[in-house]
Length: 448
Image 1 (cartoon, rainbow, N blue to C red):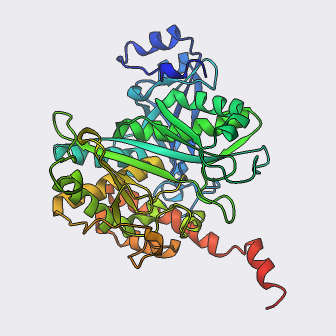
Image 2 (image 1 turned 120 degrees about the horizontal axis):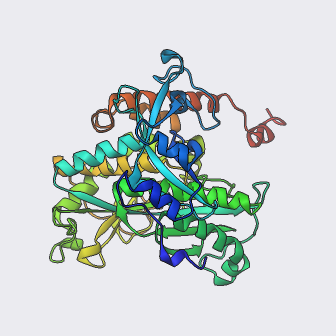
Image 3 (image 1 turned 45 degrees about the vertical axis):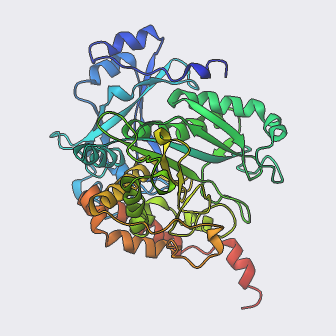
């Protein structure tokens, strides 16, 4: 990881300059990518000459990718499959996202803006959803910077654990897997400045924090951080998983999202040293909006059947609809060490979130709270897992029903996205309900 400190190599020029920039850096191939609802990276790799020919009109893909479930099956009933004859949309490379990869030699990667052949945006695309929400935020006079903290398990090539025991923050445990850690972090450093990494609360589990960036850019960086980690692990003969709860009776994987609004001059819009908890009304209302809307957005923050297995007391996965100051058992933890860095940290998400959608949902709910001056109530104290407080929905079907009924979701994310996301997730939920887990069979088959 000798070059990781130098940070990502990103393109910052014009369309006329991009091919020269690629060739100067030795890039021979370009990956043109986007992601589906499960957060899975999709795309094509091409040589630089073909990329140059495709810059103006983009690259055609079968739109049915947005109808995939997590296993890549085509979900019926969306706007992207049989109803349009499995037709194409166009991936237009967004050159502001172009970067050089570190784990794939001589290769660059660019994220895409998805449009229909007539130029209309594909409104169900997760990246477009985040940009839609960010646009409304900017109309309100705000910007946003955010920083996710990802947790993941390092596994062997058969997806089994590489370690035993619980030794959170252990530097000796970290040293045991130092070569693997360096390879993973080197790959991830293509997508952001990695501020800290440490051995986490589970065996072979790590947490990595990325330095804050504007929310649109962090959507790309956070998505690609996970994708590159998984690819780099495979190159070593290992695997990593961001699955929310990969192992029974152990801690799960979280994705904690730190977010600050800034005003038109780039100043933090949340800090107020002379007010209670050193936060102002804008911050309070943002928190109030998130707490008020978490239940109807749970299907985004907890997108898979396994997500809900993480919602158990005592394992540092908040289950209460409450906020607190530096309280890790709260859904929203306020960090107020300095006015310039005052921010609410959303702690409920698992590592399995679609990063674009989680950022969009967090931001939309908070902005709705600012518009409506939503009071979050008093800050909670103590271990909230064992107090009588309102809880997040812990059932996937209930969460989907609340999402489907959400006017906020339709307003901020658009009807097209809400309709198609719900269709895909309902398909996955119905499939999940038809499966009989081995653990369930083992518990009941003898005695019932």
